[in-house]
Length: 302
Image 1 (tube, one colour):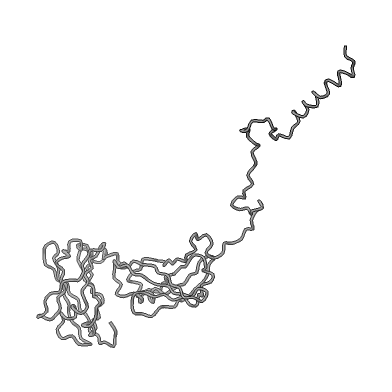
Image 2 (cartoon, helix red, strand yellow):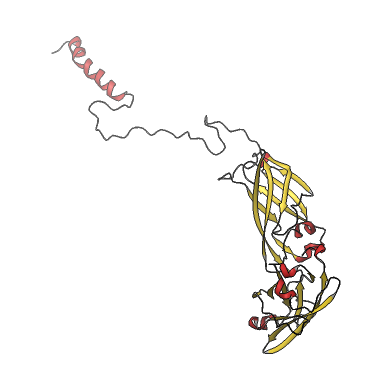
């Protein structure tokens, strides 16, 4: 038989080895398989409202233009549908600029320009709201920036301003509509004529612009576009075919060259009134509509 001391000497190494295996730190030993998985680590990536250190980020208002992915400034006009009634309106239109850098726009330098000959228009009021710069313009004044605006037209306006002392410009388009929705009221069953403009200038023989004849009413869909002619009061002048004629929603628009239209009048002089006829086929029947135009001198523009 072994003595008690001998038994302890034999068992001690085995006990120490077992404790080492059972109480290890989890690291793979030299004999562990190569594909054994290591313990997964918890992700500490910050959320949307946290800083890189994992702490909540300071909560403040977004600066001008923040959130714009490209950083480009853009222009919006409100409203972007302009009625011909704007010419006598007391309302406002707003030009809204958004994007990075609106804080650097010189509000006092803002001007709005159209496709007409009118000088660029200064706003009635300006303000900065967060990431937006806003300029307000009187509707009547803004409408005067457009050249011969007619229902169905699309017009482009340009906003200019200084950004950190450098000249910048942005453009936006508006659609022109009639105030009565194309004449659904007051005798909608009859086709009516409107000539725009109705003040013809003695310098038109040298003009490259156009004058428009607008037909409105419940039966306008039955107008034969190919039959439209403008006839002046000079019996020697041949009926004038339009340079363009189109059906646009609930009205018909025909454009004539100013020089050609003026040539249909008999010896027009400033201060006179002349009658103009627009002839067309309506459901196969020849129809004449008449309107008087006033003659102005070259000092009145046009």
